[in-house]
Every structure is written in structure tokens, then in C-alpha cells.
Image (cartoon, rainbow over all chains, first blue to last red; front, side):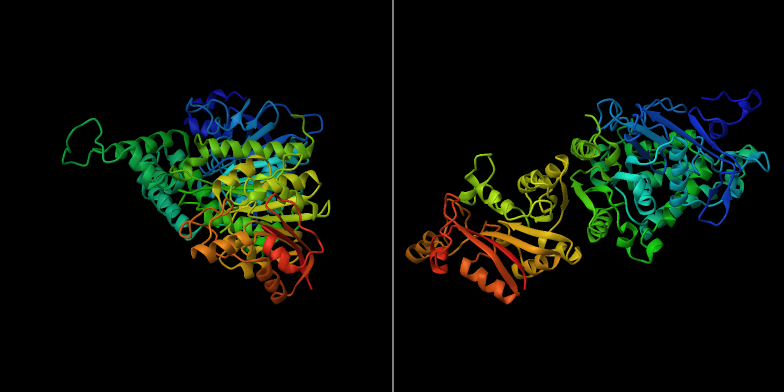
Amino acid sequence: MSTPPAAEKKLPVLVREADHPRSQLASFGADRPLRLEAGLDLSPFQIAYQTYGELNAAKSNAILVCHALTGDQHVANTHPVTGKGGWWDIMVGPGRPIDTDRYFVICSNVVGGCMGSTGPSSTNPLTAAPWGLDFPVITVRDMVRAQTMLIDHLGIDTLFSVAGGSMGGMQVLEWCASFSERVFSALPIATAPRHSAQNIAFHEVGRQAVMADPEWRGGRYFVEGTSPRRGLSVARMGAHITYLSDTALHRKFGRKFQDRDNPTFSFDADFEVESYLRHQGSTFVERFDANSYLYLTRAMDYFDLAADHGGVLAKAFTGTRTRYCVISFTSDWLFPTTESRAVVHALNAGGARVSFAEIETDKGHDAFLLDEPELHGIVRGFLDSAARTRGLKP
Amino acid sequence: MLARVPRDLTMAETVRGPGGARVDLLLVSQMVEPGSRVLDVGCGDGELLHLLEARGVDGRGIELSREGVNECVAKGLAVVQGDADTDLSFYPDDAFDYVILSQTLQATRCPRDVVEHMLRIGRHAIVSFPNFGHWRIRLQLMFYGRMPRTANLPETWYETPNIHFCTIKDFSEMCALVGARMEKAVALDPWGRALKIDAPWWFWNLFGEQAVFLLNRK
């Protein structure tokens, strides 16, 4: 925890949170730059992170949880900006599948994010203003490299497990491809070894919505005192639909009217589903930075693990000794089972120890965040078995 | 098609050894050298893999049914959801010491391709299957003129997942065709007991309710 200096109290909460997050902080000075795939160094930079549970003496019980596009490090505690519970507190906590009574859980904000790790809303030391679009474009591999520096900083050599869904799952795969020897077990959930054309297309619509907002000001909205709320809100509304499924939307909302019995013959939010989406959009902008949204969607677009390994996905996992548990959901059309299956085939080709389960649900991509007993049973069973092999105390 | 034959389909599955394990699975597991790498194709709820892990075997499984897979994974077994007919091609040559197909052959679309893949992926293949040449089955077809249904193979022809039945003789002919060498073959009676080793093939084909073959590449 760090107290924001008095002078910065007038700044928007997001700028304050970017530089002085209410989280633990690892700072890396000029001597330890983050070498980016884009070919330049990010330095100095900082990583904001949360930890839960206790690291054992052998430092062998650490689990890194990687967050998704709009997640952050507050995986299992009250969020400092929204006041809501952690985004995965159903999975992570005492007695939960990722049991903080047993494991030491680390979750860090990704580089490029907006909750305290260096990103476009952080202050650029050269200009003393938020980076904005001067921030370098980052990739999933850059996020993971930054995480390795955090793990080094915590004195941990090998992670007992790396777990995450969606963009978090991409980070898990990248960990296994680039730092396999530091990962004992891995849980890539509802993810893909590359971002599909359809997914890039959806992201581009979101980015264009942000950039079309006149208040975006070429990304200089903090300096100019504006806020591209409408653009970011529309981006979120569009994206949110892709996280659900047709069936789930129909079950939840159908064609029901919102607080009225008849259509108003206007463009008000007549339907419940419209009202719901508007709410999703407007709450999102309170806690997320528009430029971060551009940078992180871009990082996902660039993700293509096979391309990084001569076009052969199996080569990404050559010689891996990590134990894998790949999980997908039947109604997830954003990261469909075929993508997970491609990962499984590549792992099989390399003789890796892999489990793969597809869970039946109508909740779409978001299922990984929700109360899915089968998912929780599988994660628990997989970690238990890995812990036995690793010699962790029950 | 990979679902293990339903539990009540073969008599041997109801016959359990001293440890509570199915006799046919015990027999299969005893064919596997301790410490080797095994792929169990159609691993069901993971009973065989569990037996094998107790023998220090590094076991992996493929299973078609979602429930089977999820049950296995929750138990900590390395099992993937997949189909023998389509997914074996993704495994590299010589990836395993043994590839096992237990009571699943007759439910595959292309049994010959499956066995060939098994011999490519593993140094050894172990195949167990119900013998359609058993005398009871022959009698039913002969006297009633209808597709046989027994206590062990109870489904009607239009409901059964078993689309490629064969006899012990048929199977051994196919082994010759795909260039497989028979290391060991055992026929079991309805109580899961092995028939006499030195019995002639026609005897096995008539009295073996199921058979277990240990194969390798010539």
C-alpha cells in the first residue's frame, strides 16, 4: 500500500491507481529494463501484484494466476476502485480449488494494464504526463517476461502452477513455451494458441469505438481533461456479447421489456438486454483505462504461438516436462474447443503429460469465471494430483 | 467411437479379482512392464489407468465421453477428450511403450486403421474384445435367425454402439494383414478365467467369450 502524494489527489482515480496502486509493488530501475518484443526497453517500470496464502520454506507451492483482458491483480480481495469482490474469488481462496490455505497465490497486473503495473495511464518519467499512445506496443510474451521478473523478485525459481482463462490462458501457454522449466503444472482455460481472425475483428471494432469518441483526443484525454467514456463503453458492450452465448442471453433476458409493458417507440433501452449492456458499459469505464483497452486487445491480436515457433505449434512445447490441464467450454464461441484441442494435439505430439476436458455449459466464454462445479472439481483434482507428485503437504 | 463398452456388456467386467479390480483389466495390466509409458485408448472412468499407475506406469488416456474424461481428470489422471478414429493420427511414432484398446475395438469406425495407429504410436499394442465366434452367439444366429443378444451383449442391433464385431479368428487374420506379431494371446471364459494356453485356435474361437492380444510390429 502506498499513499498517493497530496498533489496527485485531484487526478482521476485511474491515474492515481496507475502510479500508486493499492497493491504490493515491485519496481524495476534502469538497471533492469523489460526488453520488449517491439525491440525497445521499458525502463523504469513497475508491477503491481497481490498475494494470498503463505510461501512454504522450499518455495515450491507458488501458483501464478494470470488475469484476462479486463481483469487485474485483485483476484480474491475487494477491488479498491469498485468495492466489489475479487474477479475469481469463487476459484481462489481458503478451501477453494486454488486453495490459499495450501498454496501461495500470486496475481499481478499485466504490463500495459491500468491497475498499477506500468501502462499507458502511468506517468511517463520523461514527460511527467501519462504515457498515452507514446507507450510502446506490448505483447503477451512481454507480459510474461515481466512476470518472470516479478517471480525472481519474490525469490521463486519454479512455479507450482500457472493458471488463467482467456488472455490469462494465453499467458499460461506463453509461460509453458518460453519458460517451461519454471512451470511444474499449467492450467490454460478457455483460451487459444492464437487469436483468430474473428477475434481480431471484434477487437478492432472495440478499438475503433474508443478512437471514434471525440473525447479520446488521440489518446491524450488525461492531459486534456476529457474522458472517452462513450467509446470505451460501446467497446465493452460489443465485447460483452462475445463473452456470452445466444442461449444464455435468451435465458437471462429473452425479449423482456425493462420497467415497462410496451415498447416506447423510441431508442430508449426498452429491452432488458439493452439496459444490461448499457450498465456493463458504464460500470466498466469507471475502472478501466481506454488506452489500456487498446494496448491489451492489441497484445492478444498479436498472439500466435505457432508462428513464434516456425509455424509448428508442437515446437512451442518441445521437451516440456510440465503437467497440463487444458479446459474448454461447449458454448464458448470466442475461444472454441477446437482451439484448445489444437493445443492438446501439439502437447501430445511432444509427449507431454496432458489432461483435457470440455465442460458442457450454455454460459459461453465467461463460464470460466462462473460457478461451474465441474470446472472447480477438475481444477481441484488436477492440482491435488500435481501437489502429490510435487511432494506438497495436503 | 471410444466409449468403453457399457459396464454390463461383457461378463468379465462383472468378475472382479481379490483387489476389487476387473479381471480383464488386471490381465491387461499384467502384460505391461512396470515403469513403462502407456496410452489407454477409450479409458472410460480410468480404472485401468489407476491400476497401471499403481504399477509405476506413466499412463495417459483418451476417452470419448465427456463424463468419463471429467471424472478421470478430477481424479488427477492425464486423460484427454478424443476419438480413437480421428485423434490417434496426432500422436507421433513410438511415443509410448504400450497402446491399449480395451473392449473398444468393436465400437470403432475403422478398426484396422486404429490397430495400425496403435502399432505406430506404441512399441506394443494390447487389444481386448468380445469374441463374436463364441458358441452361444453362433447358436442364437443359427436357431433363431436373428442378431444375437446375450447377457453380455444385450443391445438390439439398432441400438448397439458395437458396429464392428469380430471373432478371435477374424482378429488374428487382421493382425497378419497389418504386419503385427502376436507376442501373447489369451482367451477368457465367461467368468474371466483364461482358457488353456495350449488349446487349438478353433477351441478358443468357440469357447472364449473375450480375447486379449499383446501385439508388436514385425
